[in-house]
Length: 150
Image (cartoon, rainbow, N blue to C red; front, side, top):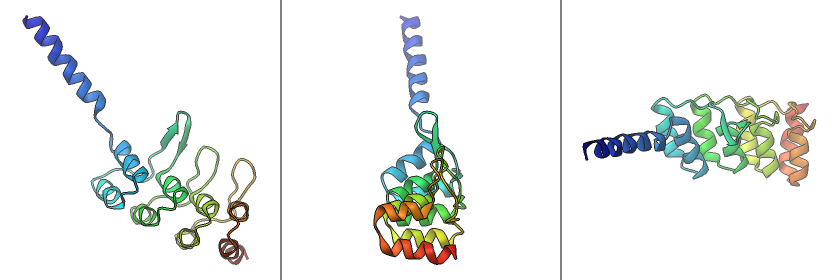
């Protein structure tokens, strides 16, 4: 009986450890759920705003690209306040600016440009933020990028 109890306790301990989330996983969950206050608290507690995140194995991206691609303005602001790298590319060399431009989000494009996003960077397909903006059909975003590229 003691051996069975010991095995049960050990198994329970391993299961608990296996289910525990890392700080990166917690930030990822907060970004996906669009909870900027949770993202802020986790980053203040020491989570890395630039940690690679794999939505699909082998294809890392960043919290900033995820938030920008979901038009999460407040979450993007929090990430930038915590020194998220604005030009950090994902595994396809896409950036947060490309994601925001692809969403047609003028407010986010303005915010990312002000934070130093480079509109001239190109992804693996040779597309830049301007191409993403044109595909989104948002004339305001196209104008913002044209003004920045001059």
